[in-house]
Length: 171
Image (cartoon, rainbow, N blue to C red; front, side, top):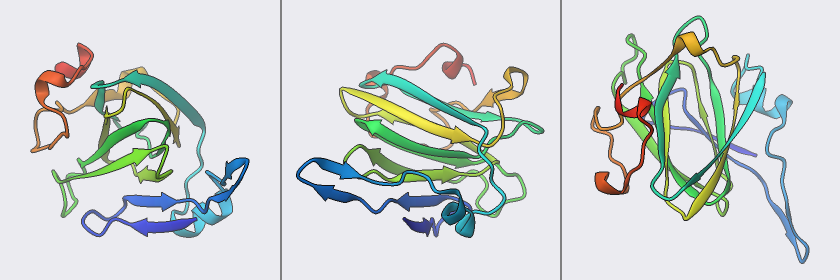
């Protein structure tokens, strides 16, 4: 795997697996703890989640408050999404800045988002399956978010094409 830290916002990482292809298809390691911890130490994932969504669905911008804050390792199994991380660490020099990346079944990139970031993604394909690991269990009482229309976030679809849950429209 190739690990690349995002220059603009420290703590965010793009992980590109080494893909082995032949006439039968392809194979790659999507996670290997010992290699992962060489670059991103002290992370132990405890839960893995998967979401299916259709074109225009935006899920986010979510985070959990301390002491249940979560780091996430996200990837797309099927389709294509615009994935966005917003730095909400008040003591960070990049507080309020965001980073956007395209994740797809074609590029197989993964995106690591540490604690202290709000996270969301927008489905750009007809449908998408989004999978992510977290290092803290979900805790409903600590759930929070930021309104996806704020913070200068630049989505790749027009607002009238975007579908969000009622909850995501209230943050």
